[in-house]
Length: 327
Figure 1 (cartoon, rainbow, N blue to C red):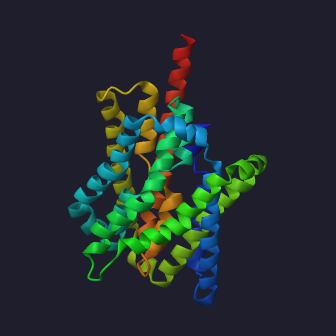
Figure 2: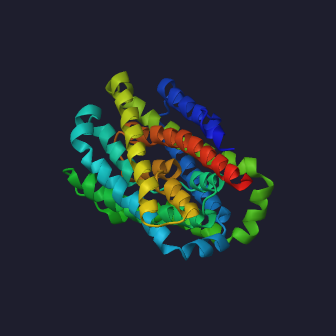
Figure 3: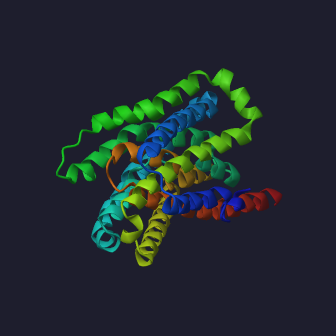
């Protein structure tokens, strides 16, 4: 099951196709305005479905494990940002201002939800804890990410920036639909179970729409004149090194703190990943008028690397658990 993430999956291929489509046929003018409106509606529906999908029972059970959630929170919103900020003297000259800001924005994002839970389940971790921790990360990230962006990115610019307006927009676009989904879960979830492929298609389709719109704007602004092959290679290496460091920390620190094996697995997968699903919509709100393509490129690359690496690790741990149970 987890090995499917090691290969280049269909969603990754579609992401690349959206970048290519935007490169050759970027949408602009009134068409772009209409497309952005549709994208906003699609994102709101996406988070409504996320809310309807989440089991309240699992959340209540998982909420009791505050030590686990505190450590995942520390990795997501303290360790990741510190690594991104410490890397500035090396990465900013290497990547340029826009790509480095995208890399730093990646470090400020919440964890993933679906893949964190899926990998935790495959590897034999604490699934209830993963559901609660990943979901809490996304909810609290709607407030923390804009504050971090305001202080460390936009706060450094010449223009004054008020994070409260961005938080209000994020709450309206992401959190309100999520809460509505939770409230209506009793009626909505049975239909979601009947059409899982449709839900998945909508989930991925909304992200593809955002990526196409973002890269269309970037291409019109001259993205490919600013980004060469060497810089792209440096970005891939930077994302790989970041993931390696955070995974080593997320592997050893829970051991040193005395967490049991299932909790170690949960902390590893929830604390080492960043969300593409929430990250791209947040970027649209937080970086209005900024080079959007350059800002979301790091999270797109990191997203695929984390899926491939976590897929291999989850499969290996699942095999170890199977071998142990056979003894």
